Image (cartoon, rainbow, N blue to C red; front, side, top):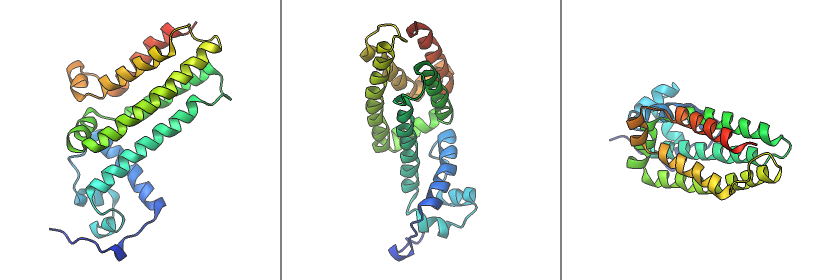
Amino acid sequence: MGRKPLDKERVNDPYIKETWVKELATLYLQHGLGKFTMDKIAKKLNISKATLYKYFSSKDEIIDAVVQYKIQEIITFEDLLVDDNIDFSERFFEIIKTASIMLAEISGQFLHDTKVKHPELFVKMDTFSDRALYAAEKFYQQGIEAGVLNDIDPKILALTDKMFIQAVSNPKFLQEHNISVKEAFDNYFLMKSKGIFK
């Protein structure tokens, strides 16, 4: 059993932690949560395990930081939804491009591992889907009022987005249909854009 770090040994440098979390996020999102021990994480970061423990007390703390990092990306993404300085049509397709890049990182294995091994974090991510639903509804309403979108109930438009996200958040769905999160997203919004724009 490894030595537990003393409180006085802990280092709180937000810049270093953020840099490491960004690097580790790519690994976790692509390969899942089960393959990386603290030894392997330290090796990936090219630091000693003792140094790693000065910044993170456990693997679970690192995983939590990665999930928080993705949630913060979602919050930043919401800012684009309400940016009236960008033409609505341009904003819609910019949102699709941005979301596609964000989702390209997420593997079915990561979703499975989070749901099974860290259900509290999966619930945290799911809670933000409700927040995104409200933001999407307002976005669609704005497009309808601007005369850019067909007059379809914005609640229904937003709800179909949520149902789609829930479907692709299920690793079994992705495996059964042999499709990645990004492929599902790209096809869904291509189909949707052709149906809602005037």
